[in-house]
Image 1: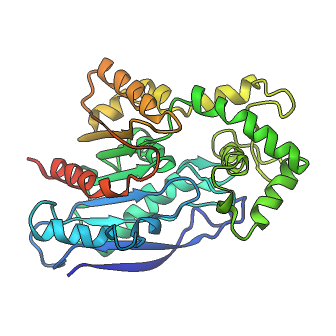
Image 2 (image 1 turned 180 degrees about the vertical axis):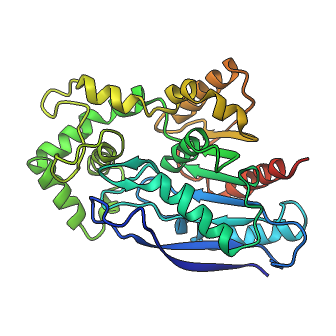
Image 3 (image 1 turned 30 degrees about the horizontal axis):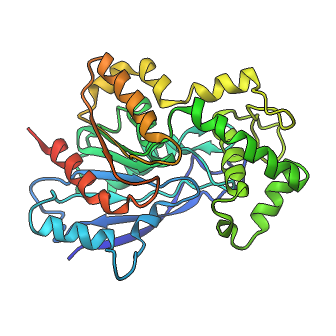
Length: 338
């Protein structure tokens, strides 16, 4: 029978981060049924990255009577031989404002280094792994999907397989559309600082889900990741639009769009070619248009002669949890292919 071990990991790279976020993090690790240090063949490892405001442990939640726990499903698939036995790691990269986007930022901290260097070495030092990027993959949803793509491009020395589930992309659409609701919510609160203070003081801010407040918080949190500026109070980043007129601020908009995976493909062709597996998945009715972002990424990959798998399914941005075991199966099978 499998089990999940929970570690308290102390991060050197996150200590003294400008946001004052915890540098001691909970790291759940799934071990497959009959895990053994004496097994002849080491285990492949997959890191699962959560979406905006989430922690990796979110994937371990019990969905109720009409769902399944991820670990129970993995147990079943590994036991019947459908899924190769693997180790799954669930990092916590959440920040005070909700987003790290898994990147290194002078305003947030070095979350890419935290996962790709510290946690990778931490897991390899404690478990019977291949200790090779060819047998190490990363899967993420939404912001985590962006993180997976960014790791694959910027840290292909550490990850040889990536899967993006509705990963943030097509920023020209995504981050223009959030401007009107963000302005509305921020100005109604009396400015950025008052809005953030009110949002964080709410004991259940996600009761506001679907409201302009959640959209505004998500938008503001991106500034510390993509357009960092430690001199800006509270959000520690430059907004890419004017809070009165909504017009784009050229320099901040350029800096933001440079992080769009569609644009990044052209800068990381060699790294992407080196990957053993690139998988893009999104719902056909994704509210953020991420299926179109993935199609544009796929078009760029094809133009460079880079192999990938592109899958779309009936569904929206959420409700993807049941697809995770199949994503793991396809990734680990490819990693173990001779």
